[in-house]
Length: 84
Image 1 (cartoon, one colour):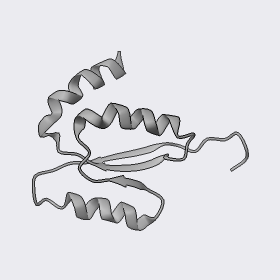
Image 2 (tube, one colour):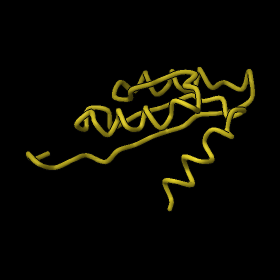
Image 3 (cartoon, helix red, strand yellow):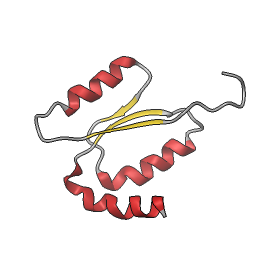
Image 4 (cartoon, one colour):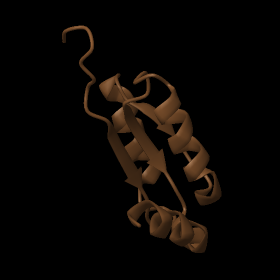
């Protein structure tokens, strides 16, 4: 990649029922070696985490997150703001 080129950002959000294998799935991304992985990120922290990704200077461009979406009511205002 030449200087000045930015690589594509990849964000994977893994969710599911208890015992469905979310941790095993994120461990697979860790095993790939180039994904920054976070297990059990609270949905309320997603906006701040995305801000940190953006401010990382493209150092965190491949991210896999495990989230419990039972708290999804915290995500609705964020996504509405993002698409408007």
